[in-house]
Length: 318
Length: 318
Image 1 (cartoon, rainbow over the protein chains, first blue to last red):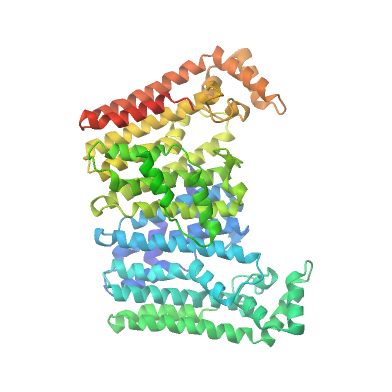
Image 2: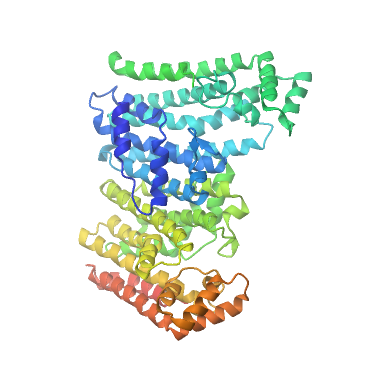
């Protein structure tokens, strides 16, 4: 499936003129990535029909949409690198990244516009909602940057919107295209949403406790940047006395040795058992997601590939 | 119709949380404007059916889309004001304007997603194409800023993409919803595209030769900013010798008295009869557009309101 997806992505024609508009799309899409979202769509559809090939092209809509959000998020976050390469707003300029992202969102809709009549409106409406929620999540994430009072539930809702609803839609979309009934498509959506929250918690964990050799990014990056992750929010909630004083000190320090900060904050996390608590929360969501998948009515041998893929996501180390 | 449109626009719920995402949409949509595009849609549909009320809500999609392009264009052009009020990226910040614009594009699609089954795919595909072309036009416009060799035909194609295709779609969209046949919807699209090009040429003209008391913006603004309008491109093409030297001088002047520059460049335009030449080109497009409208098969009394509206656009002074 991944080969079919990558072949289709490689052959997509987004548009030609002017090149500043379409080259950045090709550039970003060619940087790779796991193609997790369209794979979820195809694995989901293949639970209901062996004939998943017609869904490859529409499935790419979720990958194009995801990369559109990356292009615009990278401007907003002033991120210099994406998958180890210069971001579009750095390689070209912010205006190109704004406009090229806009046309990318239109391309995602264009890919969706080819699905059969019976599903077109349903898919569109669910995608519209998902797309708006992803924007809401990104806005909340930016709002959290300047706040120090973010609560655990608010954080979980933010990552649900920013990350998880698109995984929910990706699974649901596969089911819808393959003719799954309403009960199954609802379970698929809920599975994706829960797995998506677990997935982001895993990301938060790997950023602190990941193996630098396997993890693609700099371990401790979130700590250095004071990023409001589940770990930090939990630590702020649990720390008291001297630990609270130390944590606040690191959060407000203007000049510091990055490695020392990572070591010290990780030490506080360890003392408060933040890793264990985050893992427990993550496992809760993964378990919820897997239970939803188990509830989907489809032959066990057709369900196995999706379950195996999700388990690989759960146990991934990067 | 305008009342029905404004009432519907006033009652639209784009979304609520977080407010930074949705307040800018309400703000920009409430700044007003002529609502020209959805009016074109409704006037177009009412040529084929007296029952245009069901089309009010979907027609707003073209107004929301147009305002989305304004929100993002204003960031790219670093524009401080829109309709005399602070632009979104100034009143909030550029990140808010990027993300709020994104969700606005999604809102436009959401409004389109409610049209009847028989037309949904056709409308979507035509809208996707139109939306991508508008982005292409904006990118070309930005590219032209740093070029001194823009040709008349390139300029006309840029304004076709940036401005005219959306007017074409607006008219076509009304016809499609009202069940017009292919010949008629094609004529409507072509009418809108031609009128749109004429409309932008009129804008270029008013910026130099408009009556300051009636024109909303500063007369001569394009001259001060060296904006590549049809007038400047034509003048650069026709000027020779001393006129060319003077025009180049003003284009490269770093410090100058704005009023003196406007007076001098307008003088060169007058000497070269640029106003008359631009008017001739504009009238050519308006005539083409009106001929297309005349060719549409519908009862004359049903065609009159759209023709009258277009003639008002043609003879407008602001």
